[in-house]
Amino acid sequence: MASAAILDVLLQVLLHSCICNSLNLIDIVKLRTTCKKMYRAPVFTLTKLDCTRCDKMVVLPEKLLPNCLTTLDCSWCTNLESLPNPLPTGLMELNCSGCESLETLPVELPNSLTTLNCSWCDSLERFPDRLPTNLTTLNCTYCCNLKRLPNQLPNSLTTLNCAGCNSLESLPAQLPNSLTTLICTTCSNLKTLPDPLPNGLTMLDCSGCDNLESLPYPLPDGLTELHCNECNNLESLPDQLPASLTNLDCRECSALVSLPNPLPASLTTLVCSGCDRLNTYGLSEETS
Image (tube, rainbow, N blue to C red; front, side, top):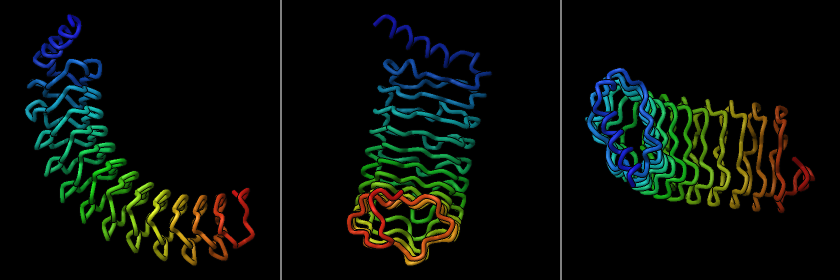
């Protein structure tokens, strides 16, 4: 107990010290058992704040965070209930993954934000209607109560990962043309994918989506990887696959009865083991 109390006092001294005027990084991971709140501090040059696994921290006061902050990592702070509103105007990376008590994000996220990671946020049900215009990566995997994504995602977005979001029944009808990677694996209630998909998409992973019955046709011209394994209601693939496709994984698709004919000449990897009803090309479980 004595050592824990000393650590808590040291944190207060650090955050109130004039030394903070030249700090670029505060890492308080080791204080996770004692840190219940953060303290207001004159951290004028602070660019990165790492408070990962501060299990007892409930709130991050907005006055703590200077506008020069570019990275905030409060992942696995399981009792954190809210984030400062507003967040620093220069923030570029926000990681709040594993914050099980976090129900909402700030209504206005800074436009400077390029990476948002809020995976494993069990209480998160929705995003703000408007996401930052410079956002390139959105990771919201295994947010089991997330019911929907914003209708309009930013035109800068290149990667969307919503794997394991079991309450998600659909994706936005129109995804941004900038999107190159879409991962929606094991979204058990997802019934359809947006049609059409962005033509710049190079990787689509919808494996483990048990209620998915079909894929959009045509698929994007530049698609190189298609993973639709363990989609148990998927009976067929589009009649024509993109000429750019190099990797096709449709293993364990128990309802799949045929593959397109012909397959793309560019294809280098084909995995279709465990497709018991597949009767085209004489493919067997050893084919890969």
